[in-house]
Length: 386
Image (cartoon, rainbow, N blue to C red; front, side, top):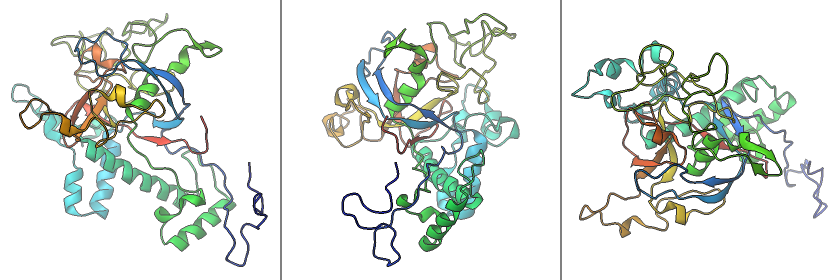
């Protein structure tokens, strides 16, 4: 609905030439940024549906509602992170560039011969579409900030609103005028309507909601045919549908002690370590690798009592609020809880099937990194009330 040429409450004209009237920009909704998939919000049961074999009891079931949002179709790959490093090296200080570098030594193990991954995994073209690892929560957050500016600058420069080449037409001229007044495209005002919302890490609730993909279980009148242990139907980890793909693995994970891929042949998951993006079927939202391949950072700080503290709308566990770190006995080494522990989810190539369930959760210091944790970005869906 358009606001019209004058205020319906005061009768005063918008966009007058006197320079004193209120300016109301013409607005046409921008399509989503590159690689983002729309996730329609709704109600779902958040929490672990698997037997709590770890006995943590830190994600008990409860009903929450999530606003609509966008999420990356795939994890951020090596080539995407190298693009970021290239931009940082050209435009930022040497100190910041060094801070942005992934820790490739996460592959090193004194009792394993993983040396080639240390030198090759991040930069060799053969691994360019494999998920980036060795990235801390802080580094992933910095990437999101850079990506926001990079995408907005690219859209402005090309006069397009998405990778599909949707032209802004006459609207571009207005955007250019705004940018010229603001001195740079990245400084355009939110009110202009030509700036995408910030890319960011998804919240734990958003990630779990998107991973379960419950939209594929509905049949009538808000009823659902089943819950989901994994991002697909059933309790099996293989494709159960008849046809050529029947029996193929649905995710990249560790089957058991010493078994990272199964025997050679069509019965294995095709990957000893990580695997290329889109190598396994997407879930019902069209998201790839929401189970297995690599774990993924989320925004939330870790608390074992998060499920009692969460608001039941757009749940997020912030640091420094309720269940304070000072209540935990870190001084005497009886606890490791502090405000720098961040949650990661999803399971990885090195995890057994238990961790593939979206309701499971683990944590790590926000400055730490491993060869099993990567990330993907999310973004709010503007102008939607669902």
